[in-house]
Length: 394
Ligand SMILES: *[C@@H]1O[C@H](CO)[C@@H](O)[C@H](O)[C@H]1NC(C)=O
Ligand SMILES: *[C@@H]1O[C@H](CO)[C@@H](O)[C@H](O)[C@H]1NC(C)=O
Ligand SMILES: *[C@@H]1O[C@H](CO)[C@@H](O)[C@H](O)[C@H]1NC(C)=O
Ligand SMILES: *[C@@H]1O[C@H](CO)[C@@H](O)[C@H](O)[C@H]1NC(C)=O
Ligand SMILES: *[C@@H]1O[C@H](CO)[C@@H](O)[C@H](O)[C@H]1NC(C)=O
Image (cartoon, rainbow, N blue to C red; front, top):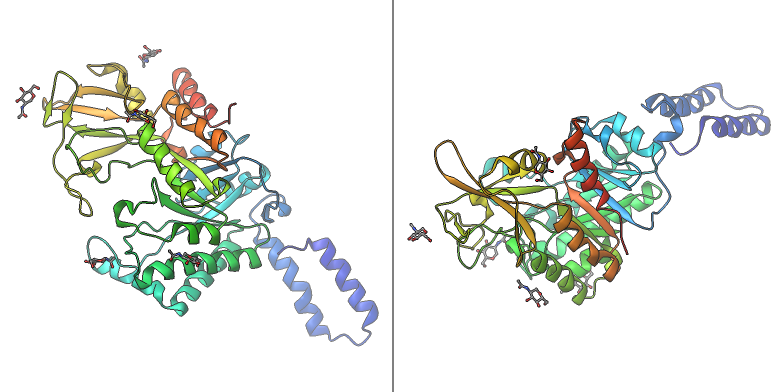
């Protein structure tokens, strides 16, 4: 896979010269191998199937969930695309032509998950042979699809001092070792919650996992997944809360260069049980992992939908000084008030300033498909603005 057909040809010629009685059958087999690899490469240029080997100074890590909107992304900035939608060889070839890595989604779909409803235990990964076969399967897929690594996305509950706690660290370490060994220059990353303090009962060995992989993608969003105080609508990624999360990762001893800041390109639409004069929106109590209420009372909405709705809302875009985030209120057809919290270039650039100030590795978003790529003039401007704030600014 790594050798170009030309160099294989040269190698064969030298073998032939030095081995007069070389068996014909073996020769035929040898000839068939490079031809097979070349034919499998779906790109116009076979070298686009080779893994990316250069390491960027600043990481821009993009989650893609499908369709063809990737054609309109700002490829001058992207360094990695995590493919969470259907595999698209055209996307792989294009990313490689821009020097960007393409990585697999590393999820754990457990049999138990299919059979039951709700949270899953990670018990299977305690078994080293389960881990080995999981890694072997992912590696095989990555090679077949000419991918440059894997993004491990396991968001399940883990207790401290449980067998799963150490097994998860082992899984990440073994995956990284296998990928680095088998795919040159490959990248293994792990998605973590906005804070290391057992958010959503995810008590992981964060320092162990950070050491075991190339970097952590910090999901600085869904920060209202566990609301312990008043059940009211609030920002998806409030300024202080978000940055406190990074402070806490760094305080644990994790090198800032192992942290990529994940920002949301979506918001939450909450139905208000009551909307006060002061814009306090009381929400339904939907418990989550021990907390009495959560953002599960709301509905996730992509930025492109928010941008269409904000001007026709009753409040227009408002700015919350405490959370440093925009929101608006609207009334639905049934007469209910809603409050929508989101992120825009202003709120994102405030948080992104932390990246340079604290030497984080880069930025990324969930997810790149959330913007309006239709091309109409206003949408185009809004979309470009969102990409632009990813650029590090001093
Ligand atoms: C974690 O511990 C609690 C209390 O001991 C238990 O009820 C729960 O099932 C455990 N969760 C997992 C994922 O093992
Ligand atoms: C986390 O993992 C590392 C590496 O495996 C290990 O040395 C360390 O003791 C673990 N930390 C805890 C708190 O278990
Ligand atoms: C709704 O808010 C108004 C104004 O803040 C308040 O007077 C009223 O008691 C609230 N209603 C409920 C059901 O909480
Ligand atoms: C929404 O309002 C902003 C600022 O007031 C304006 O620039 C923009 O053109 C408006 N968009 C629409 C769709 O009306
Ligand atoms: C945010 O953090 C800063 C610094 O720690 C503090 O001064 C400020 O009061 C905090 N703001 C809110 C709304 O919590």
